[in-house]
Length: 545
Image (spheres, rainbow, N blue to C red):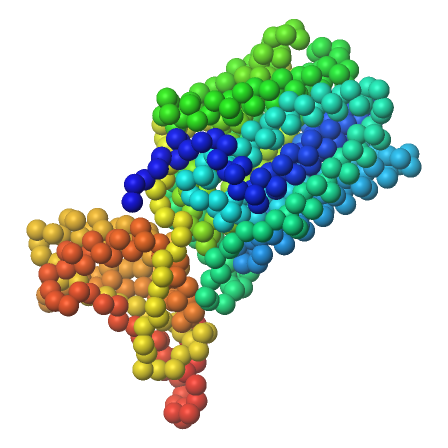
């Protein structure tokens, strides 16, 4: 089968899918309302609070919930209906927007109320985002995922180029109440679209995992996957530094430029327009520039934006700098998001994305607090100069922690037929010990060990515990692979998770085996040596540390 380079897929191809098109379009309507609301909240906070930190915390209040809830939301998205999780998230967002509109209408508004309702909306986003992004791989073919992720970001930034300016106009001529009412009404669009959209989701033949087990497995998979670890670390550091642009922009407008809400909205629109332009040209840029070099250049672009904001108050210059920063912002976030999507099999993609969202959101929330504190205790100039220095470190990280954007790992698990057993095991019987013997000639030893290193990574990511490789002291050509799973169900789940690419490692190992028949796993159940019991008693589950 010919491989189709994702970078060459049409940028608009995902819109041919009715479900994706409906949800994507409704999301743009909701995002428009959200950006109008965020503009109104930020400006309202700047007018009712004299604290620079409180203004900066507006960004933190809506992003911090992702740090606390995203990992749990990812496990829920992988274990339950992703559509249901998306609906629950949008309900929370709608509730926060409606409450804010009612509160402002009644004249009851305070800095802590604004932060609290921003936090509630952030909880909705923390639930919705992992499920929505994980559903992209369910709705579309794998080759369309990069274009879909870029479309999601480009769509948001198209709205970003309109929303803040619209928010500024609404604030100037109609007041904050109109902005909050518009946001509350716009939240109905995604609720309707998600409820009506239909798409096929492959159902696992195995029972649903417990949430605690799903969390553990997702964390283990992420910790073992070096490419995902690198992407998450760089995304977190980028979020920590780059959020200074958006978090402190109201203070730049108020203190350095002596502007009002229209100027603030126009500058946010410039940021969004830069991101929109970068999104339209992202496929071309990724074909022309190596991925890590493009990410490094994007971080440098955001650093230049920060330095410009620190050193000038000229409206045209600041607008150009924000457009450059918006371009770097979009290229970095979409590049990292796509990398994690394509590096994660379907059974765990919600969890890997949620871990990424959690840590990058922690970086964003922490950055809002750090740069707000520096601005309050020192100066805005010092805050932006510090953020620029961190962004240059993010660019330099490309040489130490490279990210493979077009990872060719298979996302779909392969079929597995459970072996016949002489014992009648229950799903929770265990631990299950798995051993496989290999006869390896001396001239194949290096190739065998290379395969086994990959085998350890593959099996451990899927759920194998205490994986080890032993060599016989009596017959040096005999090697034994050993691992265990807590229960029989865990063993079945492990094998269902292995993709065709994962199982190719086993095919290569079988080719190196110097014997006949090919190596076969030998299964056994660990049994304790406690007091004697009758044969009629069931085999107990033995606890392992």
